Each structure stands twice: as C-alpha cells, then as structure tokens.
Amino acid sequence: MTDGLCNPHYQRQKKKGDVEANIPIGEKHGKRNGRWRGGQATMPDGRVLIYSPDHPNPGVAGLYVLRYRLVMEKVLGRFLRRDEAVHHLNGDVTDDRPCNLLVTSRGRHAQLHYDRTTYRWKSNATIQRETALAGTGQV
Image 1 (cartoon, one colour):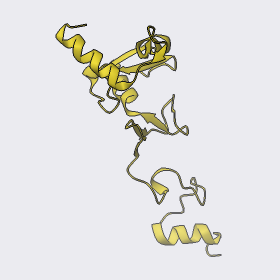
Image 2 (cartoon, one colour; image 1 turned 90 degrees about the vertical axis):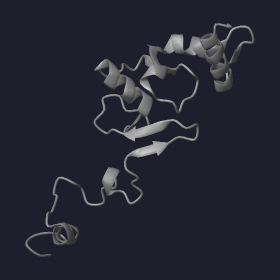
Image 3 (spheres, rainbow, N blue to C red; image 1 turned 45 degrees about the vertical axis):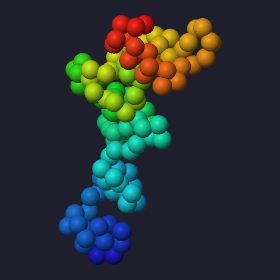
C-alpha cells in the first residue's frame, strides 16, 4: 500500500490521476464496461434502447428506456406515465419520428393491436397495410 491506499485504489490513482473514491472497485456499468457501445442497443424486433440511468421510469434492467418513449417525452415536455403507451401509427417499430407516434393508454393501445373479428393479435404487417389504406381513404 502506498499513501494509505489499497492496491486497487493505488492502481486507479496511478492510471487516472484520481482515486475516484465514489465509484466502487469493479464497477462495470455504463462507460466503465468493456462492452460499452455508446449507450444504445437494438432489440431483436428493431426497437432501440437508450441508456438512461437517471430516468424515473426505466424499463430494461432499470437502466434503459425505449427511444420512442424518449422522443414523445421530449415532444410533450414531460415524462410519460407508466400507464401510457406509445403506438407507432404505421406499425413500423423502427420508425420513431414524432409524426408516427401516438401516446395512448395501455388499454387503448391493446385495442389498436387486437382484431375483434378473428380474436387474434394483429401483425405489424396488418397494421402497416391498414395504415396505408387509411391514408388513401379505402378503409
């Protein structure tokens, strides 16, 4: 030990010039993780997660928020409530433009995705087709 520091804190002082006592040894979250990719991750279905550890309603792992929720929060100037959902009007979950997003209740959002004639959930392709037809007035 040197200067009253344990070896891990001494090594940190030596490498970085600061002990960073407020950060535990071995802390691997965020930028300190070797697999850090800038705070953005893409889910298998194409939805994008943004690293937001200070967000009041984080979703995935308590550290990430879906990008379309952040977009709508910026547009509205407030945080979305947990009972609010964001609907993609054209059915494309990768299209996070504000003009394609609609904030709605979770119940209403489920109704938008449920087909009462077949008693099945609508696919994204069906939603995209319905949106295209609605734009032409053919629905």
